[in-house]
Length: 211
Image (cartoon, rainbow, N blue to C red; front, top):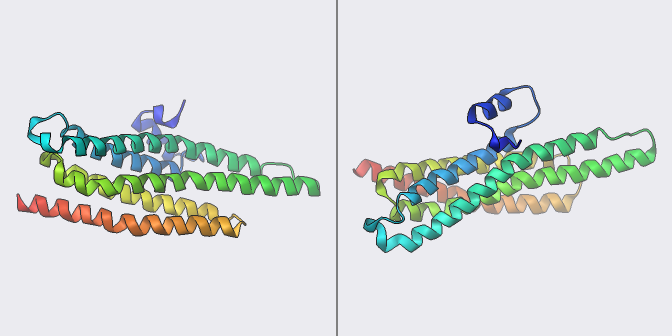
């Protein structure tokens, strides 16, 4: 059974246990999925309503993006645990001979890169969610505007957490070009997403205070 098939209680019990999975990477992905879902709820309460007919197509487009990224982030919630298992298996390979040691080193490096790609995917997905939130806050059902702010905060938190989980894998990877490439992408994602998420939260706060 996949982690995402479990109840919330069971998942959090497993996360709190002394078992290696799920871990922080999986939790980051789940937080991102919750961000996308929270925003999708606002869009779902907007589409199909006569009051919002003028923005129907815009909100439908936003809703599709949010649903796609929610599914992607749920996949990554499970994939993180699988990637961690692969790293553990690589470290468990025999190292009796020089050939064994070389094969083990190569397997570890491959597994670490695969593990880094999961939180990297989380970061990319969250960076797809955040840019549509300000438009949703302006055009979506205003009765649920606070949920757009929640989505922005959760998505940014998930992105920060994903960055940490990429870095913890990069710390053991020897491929300098790979490391530079991933750090550059992370920098780009963070530079674009942080101000965008903060702008959403500021807008939502201002709208709430103006009520």
